[in-house]
Length: 186
Image (tube, rainbow, N blue to C red; front, side):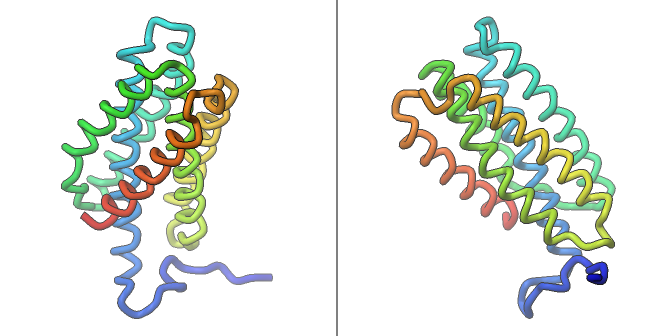
């Protein structure tokens, strides 16, 4: 039987403290949920009145709930939000509008790409959190399950049939990974 671990037991010298690690997680997740909110708002601005609108609205509502929870955690844990929020405000909306202007399938390719990276990101965070952060881990696991539903919905709605899917998806995945890396640090 394995013993319960504590957050940070796997850290190396120079990695910072467990508290700093958790703060970085909350900072990046807060930024990510904010960015997701803006992506869906951009998609809704273009596709809200189409057949894709209800699915996008549902995903947007879940992202608003995720963001509200991370808003609470930022305050409760006294976490400094990323200074890149104004960038994510504009970039998220632009990505949502831009992908939607390419058509509903491209918007869903955007959603699939972002949510696939977030699935991996949340899985790694949940694994890194110890029993001392069981509540945060449960929140991350709950939100991860909903992000996976978003990804699967996007696939069901034709994400992989988008023109230029491989290029579009690859670029968005790379951009999402860069946003995660930057937001956890800045």
